[in-house]
Image (cartoon, rainbow, N blue to C red; front, side, top):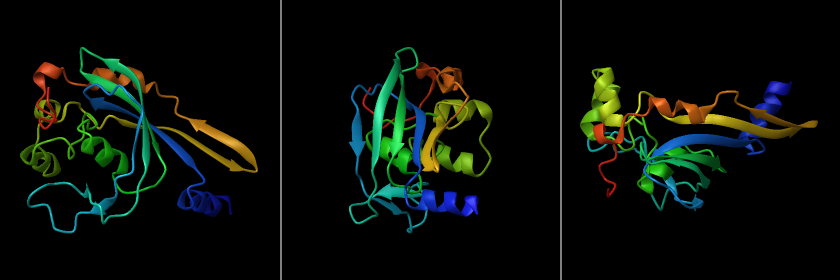
Length: 180
């Protein structure tokens, strides 16, 4: 069964994934994150984060490559290459270096804004102001694997052009932890 074999490919990391993300601020250099990740078992009373960086967590590895910076939006388009598959891995690694993904309702937003989003009480305008975009600006770009032949499946969407969904930098309060 091909579908079972493809599932095994994902589990054994034989499928290489690439994502694109629009992040808050300017990233200038390629970097790798090897920060271990743990699932939040303490509850969400202090934070709405599902996972967090923890030296006793599970090993993780993501490479990041900045592709384009938009000074008007103060946002960088970044290629993300996860080598492990932890929950929210790309999101928490970028948040940890103070460049969260724009539109992220959890990582980079205040507790109150995250709570409003999760409770479905946040209006569209507050979503833009509090989270920086109308959606999570993370996009599954491509898959590469070998299954008899070599496959490279790439998204047909032009994610660069989706930056119009990002709220102007002067009007957003997303990522207040970053020094401006």
